[in-house]
Length: 289
Image (cartoon, rainbow, N blue to C red; front, side):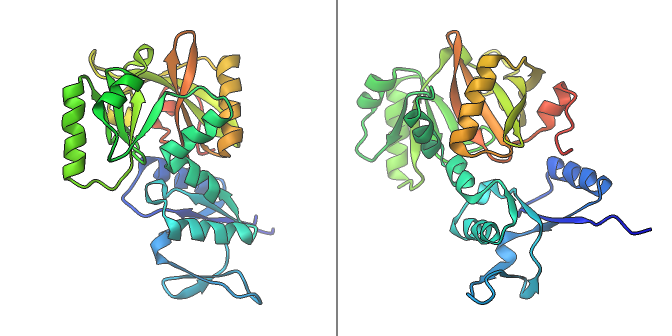
């Protein structure tokens, strides 16, 4: 009997062990899919018109995979994007594509693209060296959210309650000569300590969960920061809004965070490779499958 052909794919990732990746490898093996972790830092590209698909890993030329999962969401840089682009030009299925990673890794770009298409987003200001605390207070009110442009899992996000606190923060950023862009956002009081995470699979909104901070005064809801997860009905409004976001950002796999505001929602951010332990703990979905 002929053996069933094995699908061969790469997981582009550099870092420590992640439970979601371990689960994905287990499910892939069970399905006859051969997955290999490839550290993008180990890859060299050789461009040649007569043989444009040459890729080397640690100096050895290797055949192209059938597909590649871009799991290096915390290392979205020019070199890693170039690798994805090289794979895409050679017909390798990349999840997600380089352009999508560029959009989701830059919170401001994400909001710019969504707002341009009429998607409701929090009022946001890019903090420049000349931006004053008074201007931010006038535009956004207090309290307000201060966050780095490329943070994830709730890291690099603070809630500022007073203009004095804001002035002190801006002075510290100036003194530290901070180079990473910083955003100021209106605080959505209706969503304090809670939000919705919509999981996207195959370019479609699949399931939805409510994330909540376990402490009464907390304002972050991330599962990785200790938040709780509860299944939440996927209403027509949630599905329609999420589908519009997916189309604009180009998500194949990902997460969309929705904040409660009045009777509706605003889009907080999007993620290319979201954690899925929370969603699996409160739904029957087997995400890797």
